[in-house]
Image (tube, rainbow, N blue to C red; front, top):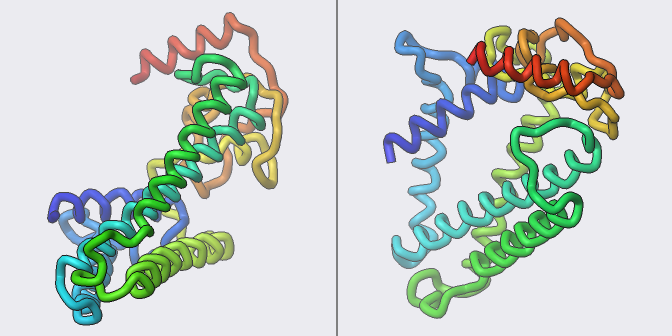
Length: 239
């Protein structure tokens, strides 16, 4: 559990440095640990632990907490599959290190199967189990608690994202993330482009996310196959 909390806090802190978390959460102690973020995480887990008093027994609460996490994970997978389809549509010429075989048909088939599986997993997670009455109390309490917890977490994420648009001072100049491709291409938001420049080439030697773009590329900029191969070799040698 301690390892999981450390890893989660560390990765969230890295993402926060890109401008998605207030500076207070990004502050580190002398051991370079995201102390404030981990304290907040501990406080949140303590509050959740006290909510056990609302449930007849601990087992019922653990079941609901586990299913809440399952729903959240599946929602992230749904976003991932939708993003995959959007990228294939908006950046059809962008070279990838791996492409799903079968062209558009293969891409849609893979994404649809993933979406169906994710939705089915959410339904199973919310569906009250047979031993519900003894462990939780009623189907209404079971479903309501899961939905409320999911909405609270999503609401916090959405609020932080909206606030991050107004607080450019949240960006850590030394964060580890490269800018989005649409930012490098000088666009206001993601949209369809015809460029065939690889993402790895576009992000190479750029300033971190949230900082001024060092070198811009055109939305429809094209490079020859010969130059593509040369750039890929140079990037592999740097790694």
